[in-house]
Length: 322
Image (cartoon, rainbow, N blue to C red; front, side):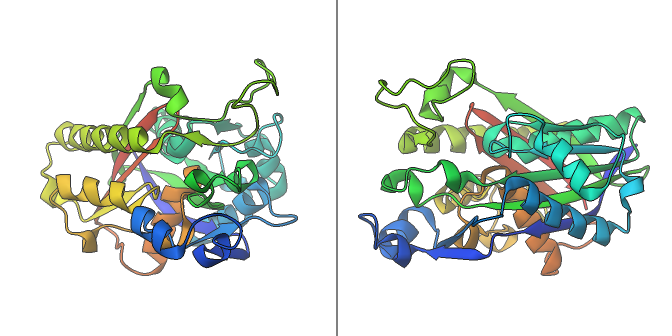
């Protein structure tokens, strides 16, 4: 039994912030940002736009594309690091917004790998036979925890949500998923505020913001993504040249290009949205996937490799026949 992607959907906040706009408030420029990251603009959530509201619109579009109703959904898994509330989970809030009652609904927090982790969880539910139709969402409003005076991080992130409907299928779908984590590297990419440890304003790094050691993250990301790609191919007895599309986490164009080079894959077979979306964390991969589907690039029967790397560190891949 496989998990087949029956429909995709996405939603982006209305407000677009360009690099030129950022250069008016922080010491940067369009050229500086674009050269180092490939980012030209990002969407920023405004009043009334939340992780749940963006998730709802993305979910409704995915459900419409899949031809399913709220009554058909057996499971909701939402990948996010920016939930509306500490509890209830954003998945439960989304469940209520969609008018779905009774099925399990929960969040997965794996930073930028959140959607890959969430897909893996849903896939295992479907493979076990306990679920037939699952709604999987990756969504963030990460700009609400950005230090807008730190040009090393504020230029990178954006908001958005993407969703897929997975349905049980005995012929095609997700071939394998591969997840990893290394908590010993936490302080290379993290947010130092939590509930249990509390808020300590006397500490230098206190505050709800993203802290990152960019060069170290880059090195670890390229190595980890190379490894997890090889792991996916080896597990399925496939050659890298058999992959039709690479759909990577949209963190940095240089990381995407490095991964494609190691795969010996031309960039015209790589889905790139980082220039328009920035790094939307858990929303990144499903946003890129939906754009690829809506544009007609991704066609039924093609082999797709989805991969992501994020704070934790966490990383993973999903190899699937679309």
